[in-house]
Length: 380
Image (cartoon, rainbow, N blue to C red; front, top):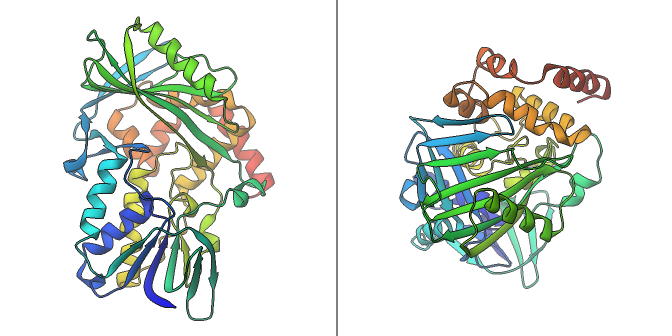
């Protein structure tokens, strides 16, 4: 049985960000690392977007925007976000970038094997695949078990689910310097629904029909909504170049409570996704650095997330779970007049209490007061 210092079950975003961070540090140069996944990560299976005021992965970004737009049925607001840029990375480029770095480090092995089980012993953890049994001093698991979420009722579970179309038009119809962050002018139909538009040229854009809700839709409903949106923009002559779709869990479930000395959950399986929005890339970048710090310096564990932003997220998820149509009101309140830089720092969980109050004041107060009292009586 082969033994490793660290074994990663799954080679998605969280694993690759963490391994990338480890390989930047001399401390880990002698650590043996194994990556396990049933799939080879070489396709463009998703698109990640995030805002940043540094050069984070700027070399592999396929596009950057200096402005974002928020729209609902009553107003539309274009916002310059300097010193931030809104950045888009296609997964194929990210995978290639990180695996190229990994290939230059002999202490890292990659095996295309499906993980069957992970068990902890007194001094290590064992990973059983379809082909082999491996032993790791610490196993990092990024494979989400949906049953953990669905079989509990204390914390609401929603999904950020979407279908995206990459389209190319014959006429110049898009504004490539501005990304549409949320367009709530689409019919809500009792849910929180919006269109997300990333134009990369006057004739090219990614349009994603996105919901924050409990249940997925039939695929035809996502597609019909995108077609209608294009028609409302007077776009009828276009080519569908590529599709993407996905579903991201939105929950304040305390995944980290299952972490132990030898088994640690990461990524969505570890609660790394921003619960109230589904944002993943920026949150995971931060958590990967915190995890590397913990492994290198034995600093305080970075896994417990029950702080004020966790509480804010919990209240919003409680609201949307009980009345899923309220999302447009909540986000419209935040984006109606506040400085965009403040909004982005709030979503990045980097604001002070005073700054939080400036934004929360614009939200529908009765909804949050009701959610607060209900949560107090039901427990945290």
